[in-house]
Length: 81
Image (cartoon, rainbow, N blue to C red):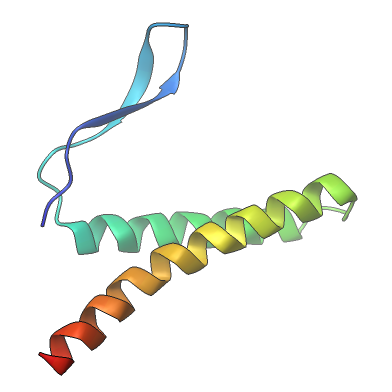
């Protein structure tokens, strides 16, 4: 499996400034996303805690767990087949 082109990061109501490239192996994309979320968590944890930041931390941790579960689940399914 590979990624599709996906534009993101709106800079106006009709324009985006960034995009995921088509053709990146899904495993590589997931690994990179996980590393980016890990770095975001690290930066967030350096800040003084408040209710808002705790909520943001929870959202990042949840997204990272979902991403990390994909290759693990895929490997387990392949091993069972």
